[in-house]
Length: 293
Ligand code: PAF
Image (cartoon, rainbow, N blue to C red; front, top):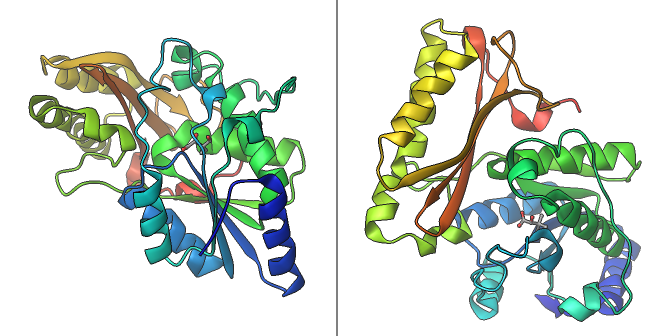
């Protein structure tokens, strides 16, 4: 597995792979891999010939009060896991490589970035859209892979790729969960045992919402009340947001007349977790990756 820190080196590797006629799959990450990342890498390997993974904790997508400094990092372990997942090349640039002195450009996606995490983390999606654009320009992949756990991020990137005519396909891969239902996240290691147990209220609340919809309840306010009650009943949980919004535009809805996104951000102590599910009326199934944006 090749390991590069500079834009010039990874560009050479991409050029070589392209000259051999290989298709390029790209998995952008902030490292500290868990099974969710590895599933993205395996999916990239399944659909593309040459897989590149980037590891870069992007300062631009963290607010001043957020967890950039304490975001978990372990490059050696990540390289080992990427190698085992048959990744062909890793790009792990320094901050200076990505943001040289005088850096002054940003990419902003409007509308769908105003709700959910865009609302509670101002500037977050500007940072994500900017770094992902840079990474796409550096790697020029045929396909890039994102997890559904960051559903809003996946929609923002899809919209950006469509609007800016970026020549690649975005593949969204279903959320990977622990056996007990907690969505995998690099931040889960920060949960103490009591918080870890409390975090199961997220999955439980989404299951209840699914059951309500299956039972014919389509009124959003009623579903939201039930979801919020389950989370609020957990003393260690503090709701940042719990919302049901339309797909793919993330606009408020009063009733379910098609698939909608139930999305939540909840704090357990110092750790903020996000999760989501798609609620579909009438037993329709919804493949997030097929969403037309
Ligand atoms: O999902 C992430 O890990 C990050 O937001 C991404 C896409 C790598 C951009 O920094």
